[in-house]
Length: 313
Length: 275
Image: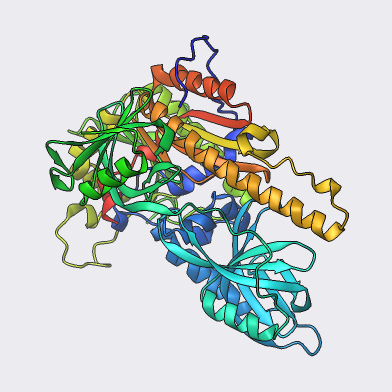
């Protein structure tokens, strides 16, 4: 945390230039704003009425769908996607046959768009292919000969759920991360299809994921201009520090590095989890974060244990 | 029924005479205020056929542009309004069709004007309450990313181990991949910390903040924060100052700062929640 920026800086000015903001306005106007009584109106931002690319503009829709946000849109869009899937299969090579296929996606990390691109995962006896349904495009593919390793790995979604992803390592040193409706099945079939050719040890270092010292549901009394607000979310204490994230936020609203934790104490009074559930984490810069948990003792004990030098109240 | 028996609704707003004078909306159609007697409210509308607008991408973008320009102009005149989404159309309703025994006047028969007037009358206390909460406030959009190519070695903790010194091309690619992965992970951790700090600072200035999806992102960028802020109009510069401070503290940060707009992201009527 940095504070005490003394130099007076010229404020950035927001822009309303439509050449810059039109995509954002499209997203906002198709998705946001007052909605009248539903029985009263003919249409509200009815997705199927809108052109394909405008829909793609609607930002991060795939991600939002995956994370279960915009539930209203999910059904329409999924139904539309499923119709598209039925219409379009994979163009098979001569003598190639499909082993299995399921909805899924490919994590694009190097193109013009970084993020999950949904489509259909096809495993054939020759290839592993992810095809976008509409407009139709092969998003990613690899010949089975080139697949060196495949591994399921858990990924924590924004909503706090764990989902299994299929990581595939290729002979050229490349790798890909795929999502699939039935990741275990895809992994098993892929392993079978590559019969004996897969290296057993995965050649890449696994993602560095700190072992949690404690984690679970946690309330954060988030300071706001109009007064603090209790918000529910997921807390996670690791050797690196304390992190709290709400399911609706894209990233944590609270990150306290272990070195910045000066103390932790239980606080009297009521929190959203009841009486005596509130505790306060003090930071070395004089700040504090007020939290509440069903198991406040476990949190304070583990915070104290993780940082033995600090005082407990 | 006539060809134009529906109302395309742009916004609900305090009834101020002349607020829509000379304002045109979608396809250049003139807008008017439909006053709702006894409520102090009006709806900003144009007369339309009872079919949703649909068309290709460019067409939709043009309509959205026209709608947002019209709403913004009227918003600046009145100081506050509840903007509606695209394609909100109220149609007239013949007495015999679709009856479900609902005594609710809003669902009842009548011309589009009668139905909209009845609904606004019924919802007036809530609409007025929300207009009061949004009065003098605007929406700002803040999008922050980290340009991984501009992060220093300090930021990423990158290994100085030189991939170029390795002879095998395959191994070199492997090392490069690993370094890319490390830099991504470091950027993720930095983004988390930046997000928590910035969110806290923004919330000390803004009345509300909603996470939003993003419309722009370059491949070498990691998302930090993408949010719609509800901000008093005289606090726009305070947000701008926070952002310029952030830019000075972390040069790898890329900032998009859009607005001020009518409070689209904060205009849910109580009916929205019911859905």
